Image 1 (cartoon, rainbow, N blue to C red):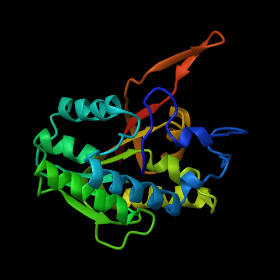
Image 2: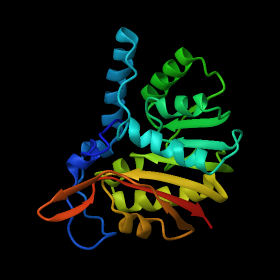
Image 3: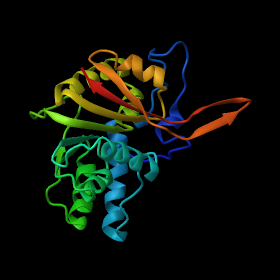
Length: 236
């Protein structure tokens, strides 16, 4: 998936339109929820990287990535713990994990161009141990399982904007997450489309909230809130 800003509305947020109570499938369908869109995005970014060496943007900004890494380090997660980045995009988050010493990290994306891009960036950085796979998280073809940590920075948001039965795809996402994450494993999700309460509802079966991570706040019309939700769940 692609990039957005931590305080202002990433790409997915631009398409947000909600009605009714939390948990209802009330997002306006968008091209941001289609594979064709992301294939085109990463084909362009791959060409840009080849021409200029520019790795592209970071989903929700660099601070969102650092926020997750700080939490992982605070928990003293072993450096050989298995980590899965769901919808890895340009793979920059994997590179940062590798720089922190993590040795068992995997990135998946359903866009072949994204995996080509992330592979090129990772090769340039010299981290040959990082594993990459072209995988649709909603239709996993390989035996991905047993991960200690799963990371999502915008993939669930994009799935929620799918023009094709987004509600069922969200349910399948939760099933796939249950499959790949080991018992007592952690799921770290950052979203600009879903509030904390809505995410608690979406992941109510088989997961419990472990921690809410601090994110930038905004104030408007005498009310304040968060433009991004960042939660840590643990598989029960």
